[in-house]
Amino acid sequence: MPFIKELGVEFISASGGRSVVALNLEPWHLNSWSVAHGGVLMSLLDVAMAVAGRSLIEGAGGGVTVEMKTSFLQPAKAGSRLMVSGYAYHRSTTMAFCEGEVRDTHDRLIAKSMGTFKYFKSEAAAES
Image (cartoon, rainbow, N blue to C red; front, side, top):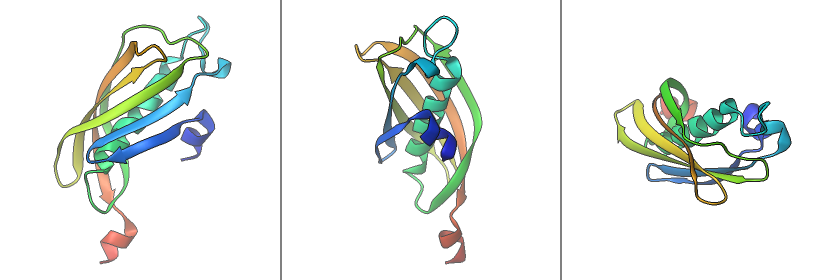
């Protein structure tokens, strides 16, 4: 995804309903208070949760976020490396229900999220 690549997201792992992504927080990721912009944090959580859910659905193609709720607990400062974990705690044939969290360099909990994701069959899976 071009937006995620441009944001600087690093994919660490994804399997068995769990995922980890990371981001080195740069000055251009900050808001006017010099802390991580909420949109950056939500984008990271969205990706981590969607990837976690997708890892449970064989042949899953693309997907969309149906619902997402995020709580911001404390600010993340420039220079931090953010580690974002996603966990799919329930799935159906086409849906996954997930949670995620953002932690900073000092393992402080920055934000938590819950989300629901709808997946579509990949073109290869649909043709078989």
